[in-house]
Length: 304
Image (cartoon, rainbow, N blue to C red):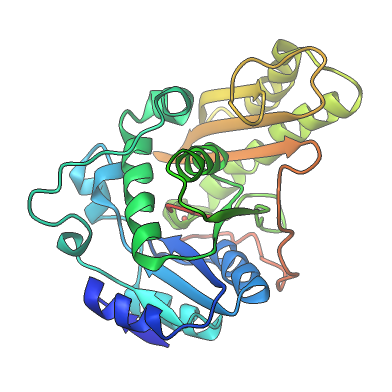
């Protein structure tokens, strides 16, 4: 495995890779959700390029980027174990050089839900992904379903800018109590993890209503909120039912839905979703060893 830290090193390593190349972009703090992305890329592509870069421009507060959980040595070991051929670990100036002044954005998709709560976040994500796609030149890139809105933004960027990359969405990996794996989960205590499991139960309540034939968004949302309200330590930002592609209002005759929740537990922001309908998730993850729901704890673009 080659670790590249400059654009020149990456270009030299990329030139020697057989196509097709799959790319997995991460901010580190790797867990089994990232493993699922890497394995999907390894399975479908001749070569795998991964990145480890905490993107400063997608954070509202600079300190949040500086304290993002991660262990570079441990992350590099996991990349190597999972068969990454090249890992790009650049300093910020290799991504955003002197005079960098371009911003990529998808205003309609970026203004709602996560974008409303985190202004500028998706502009930062879209910009770094556009840069990384140009530097790594993959045929496919792999994203985690857990960041559903992010997958929509990146699909739009790829289509609009004619980047010629196939976006592959890999289903969310969960622990054995249903909690979606995420790098920030490490910040939860045992009690916080138990509280956070209500998010999965809420999504399940919404999905059950959908499977019974409910198509009214307010009724689906009420089912989710009822469950969320059973955990007093959970602060809900949103629990919504939306059309899964544009994330706009759900039609009462819809054949697909995205159920999306964002909530705060012990000061940690957690997001999760169920997407119900055909063809929305591209890749089922390989079976991984059972992920225990730990009683004490230690969660990018493309976070899983």
